[in-house]
Length: 405
Image (cartoon, helix red, strand yellow):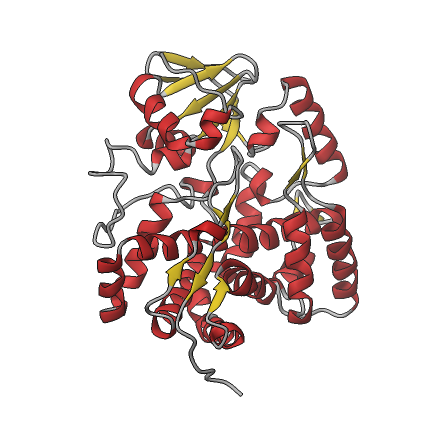
C-alpha cells in the first residue's frame, strides 16, 4: 500500500521512488490532511489540465497554496483578489484569455528567434568571465545571469538592474522555519522594485511587456499597479528561476553520458532534442495544481468540488505508459509531448524562450568547454516538494582563452 506524503523525508530524499509507487498503485491519491488529490500518470494530468470547466486556478496553483487548509485557501484567494495580487497563472478565462493574448506576441517562436543574438552575445561574455579560471558554477556564473537578462529584455527592465533582480528572485522562495506549507513568496523587495518601475514607465513609456500591461484593460478597466506588478513578478520569477535548474540538469546528464555529449559536439542539430529530453527527465517544478469546481473521476475515485488537485508533472514525465524506458536519458527520443511546460490554456507562456536559451547555452558551452567535468562533491540541490534540481553545479575544465576584449 502506498504511503505518500509531500513533506515526508522519504519523498524529499527520493521523489521518483514515490512517484513510481503512486503511478503503479494509486494514480489518484487523496490526502485527507490537505483535502487534496495527487495525479501521477501522464494521460491523467494531460486530460485534467485541459478541463477548464472542472477546475479553477483562482485559489492558487502552487503546492504551498493548495496544501493549506481549505478555509485558509479561500481566505487567501479573497484577500489576493481584493488587493489585485493576481498574476496570469491565477486567472481563469475569459480574463486569462485576454491577458495572454496581450502578452503572447512577446513569447512566440519568432520573438525567441529575435532574442537569440542577444542571448548568444551574453553567453559568450559570461563564459569569458570564467574560462581562464578552469572552473565555474554553471548556475550562478552562467544560467541565472542569462535567464534574468532575457527576462529583463522582454519585460523592458534595464539590464543594469538584472543582477539585483536575480538576488530578489532568490529571496522569493524562502520557506518560513518550522512551517511546511507557508512560503514568503512575492517578497516585498521585488514587489517594491516593480511598483516603482511601473510608476516610472507610466511617466516615461517604453517598449516592453510592462508597457503592454499598462495599456491593457480587463473587465472594462485598466490594470492597477499592483495587478501589473503581479503579472511582472510571474514573468521575472518564472523566467529567471526555472531555466537554470533545467539547464544544469542537461549539463549533468551529458556529463553522465559522454557518448551522447560527443554526439552533440559533433552535430549541434541534436542540441534542441537533447535539451527537450533533459526537460522531460529532470523537470524542476515537481507539481502545480488547481481547485475542483465540478466532479471528475479518475481510476474509480471522484474528485469533488472544493478539493485541491496537484498534477505531479515530474512523475508524469517518467510514466512508463507514455515513455519507453522512461528513466533513461536519450537525446534521440524526441518525445512528441511532455508536461514540462504544462498543457492546454495554461501552458507556460515562456516555453519557446526557455528552449532557445537552453539551446544557445548548451551550444556555446560545448564549443568552449567540451571536456568539462562535474564536481558532484561540491554541488548542492534543492530539497522541496515544489522544486527539485541543482541550486549549484560546479564544473572543472581545461582553462581556455577569452574571445572578447
